[in-house]
Length: 314
Image 1: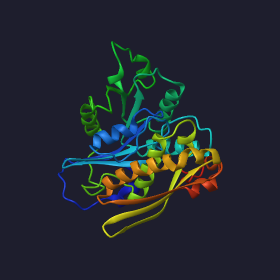
Image 2: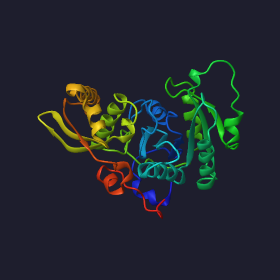
Image 3: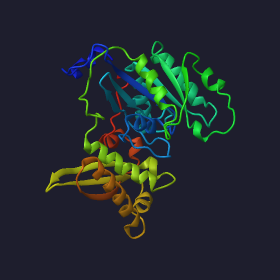
């Protein structure tokens, strides 16, 4: 934790042996980073889908016990960017390494190492060569027989190897215990009951985006952004209005569906999950608009909440 984070310190009672720190969770798209954080926290704070590049920006998952507070940073999957949004996601992923006390690198155990994995290893060594690294091979529940993971470990020989399943929880307790061992002594940075650094407007937008991703195919999941343009609590219910942006008219037709059936199903699923999060009935109004080629236009990216860091920013 850097000195710049001292403003986060809270005046609370905690034992002298209390540990705390930032754990950057990094890896290729669809390695299971969000699923792992949700499993470790015991509740969902990050959207997770089978589609790559679901996570687009850093989000904290806050794990607290009487003796420890871990700030898990859920980062976008590291990949070769093909547009401005890809550059934004890569910047957030690599920037998280410099702030970390521990790096938790997830790799898909069902796949051989990829050239992007070598890029991740090189990035870790360049940005955080002194930071402890735990290499977690995820999805081992899908494997059969004996497997040789020497090629995975050869990417970063100093990393400690764990074989886990984020989905089933296999060996995640052992991984968590090792994370705690590596954290420095320190205070709590957030209240004990807080599990995320994001507000409900952000979480609602992410839930809506998740339901769009799960209910569409092909290029749609990568072209969608969600903006919450109305959020208020009234008469013991939460009223939310949101705009789903796509890049082309044809994509709008797919998201809306025949007779509005697709957008209705997306709204039903999103409303149900948001209601579980806020603890009240939810009225959700969804609209779909075209924002042509927004992923490659910095001004339009800012409009939907994605600000590219300047070149000299970490």
